[in-house]
Image (cartoon, rainbow, N blue to C red; front, side, top):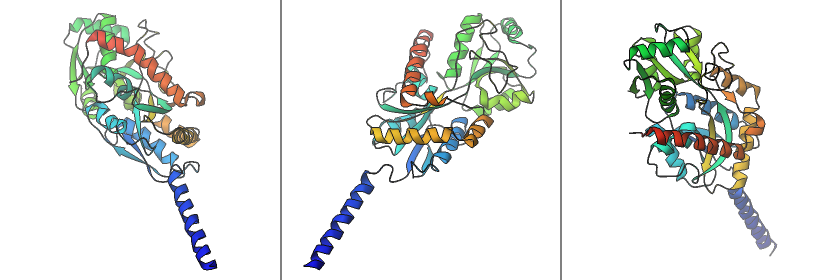
Length: 326
């Protein structure tokens, strides 16, 4: 009798332990989908974050990065939109994936309704850069040069309908200039053509070009944000130069599928906050031109508010310009 009772108690104890293991989050690896190729700027930032998150005792599990690239990030984001909402699949996206794509593409998901915001992570501005041999030394001279070229200048861009593409379109309208839009399959070949004087200029993700501007291999005419960028304080803002309201940046965040339990969202957010508060992470972010959002803006609510504000700002501009991704 005692033996049977002991066996029964052991069985129930094991069952309870198994149930607790299943209900505890996380109890296995978390996959962070990066909807762009490995080695690109978004991937680099995501891996810095994921590497630090897996060290967090509060999370207690590894966070791995999986690259699911294609179609301006929409393929990887779509995968997460349709993933099981259990907290084990999240996406590291940004302004293009969760704002611009919805205005320029026919998506199989809703960038707002099909996601649960987790955290606002980092930000890096967009700026106007040009080949070093371009004769203009400042934005005023550049605009005059564009007008003299009468539509023959070439502007490189990656894809159609992203932040840099739209910024270029707005810039042309505000300044009364015209130029040829030359599409590239990726940022690397565009950069090489700028360095090789095969293309005149681009509106680029500032972090990508920072080292080349510092080494005087490229020119930077202006930053598309209200305040000068700490990483290049000698480059003026468009607002300073008399072309306001084209502020654009590649802000980045983490989302989970809609319906993800709130306790999972809370644990993920806490792990991200711990990572972003680490001076080593801040240093690594700074080395690739990334600003970490202040602690009071790292919440799910702040990410949701940022996304909604950017949608309200950019969707009407994109619609008016008639920009559609191919």
